[in-house]
Figure 1: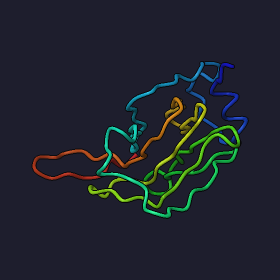
Figure 2: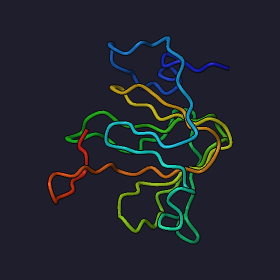
Figure 3: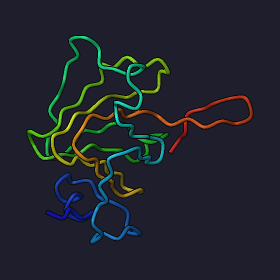
Length: 145
């Protein structure tokens, strides 16, 4: 089934900005992808420096999604969306770099939705959601979206 930005927006109740083409099919990627101040990394790429804590608490991702991060100054949310029973999420994460927001595992395509950036899909697997950082000279700072 083809998932469009309009159908995902309707499923979650999260409106996207008018400049985005709502009838476009959402691309599904099995690798690294970025969305504003977040980056999605397949877990095997960063393991063992990132992993769930022993005994981590996992939460099923509901159809309306889970807000992962809200943009700087209370801006737009990044929302993880999946069909019920196909994806789980935890924030109980150990990350040597201190950038991980959480880890999700999905047995079907899961989506990352943002009102300004649109959406991207992740193939089945395990992924780390991290904050992005950028370098300014010798200093690094978190990307503010």
